[in-house]
Image (cartoon, rainbow, N blue to C red; front, side):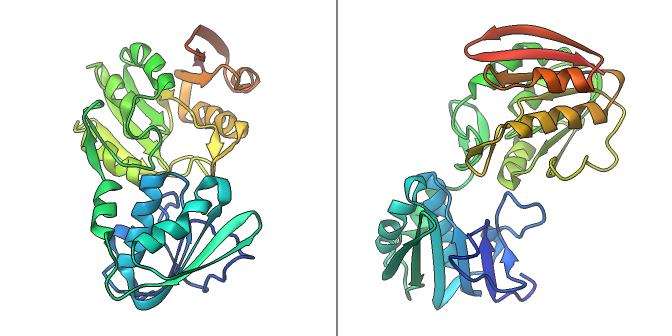
Length: 305
């Protein structure tokens, strides 16, 4: 904890709540942030949260917040009304909190103090925690991309992800679905699976029990991963949402990042929603681009560096 008295989760709007300088960041989407799960009980004097939109994930974060706050310590939780904000007050009250609520910047801001004995936080932590999802047969956690079902884009990629050879990477690997398919090839000698979400990385580390694999948390928007270049292949189902908002530039950035990691002649295979305008980015960064088909609302490509 490094002696931190205050914390922040995510990126709360700066006009809606003051965040202390030096407050410990706990978001799993911030590389280098401290895991909220690892914070000692009753160790924080104040915590400001940008509450997640999904119910199980949000209740998990609120419950963990009440666990790590000292009795009487302040909790500020905010979210857009149509992205969970309308429910935060009721969820905190169900945990035994007295809540003051206000609105601003299209968000609901709930302020409370940690009660002496919060109600039901253990259940919320269990329901929002890591587990094996039976229908996937893989470790996952609420809040991770497509946490409890096979993403249809990845489902389209799986049949063409198992014949690579040499050294490669899975960019935006999530819990490791495409990495599992890629490792089916005995000709793959090394695979680096990369995701920005710490929870996905931890799940993938469980799911990819193979000496050829390393799984790392890295923000591909910031820079290429150090020491990873000259790859033979890249596989990916690139994201196109950032903070809940569609951002087509993300996929285009992933395409540029993939090209920068590949050796000349190296191959990138990717899947994208049919509405994503990635053709120009592929043509800009690769010497040859071959469409592999369209199915189920998704299009697949193979691009050669």
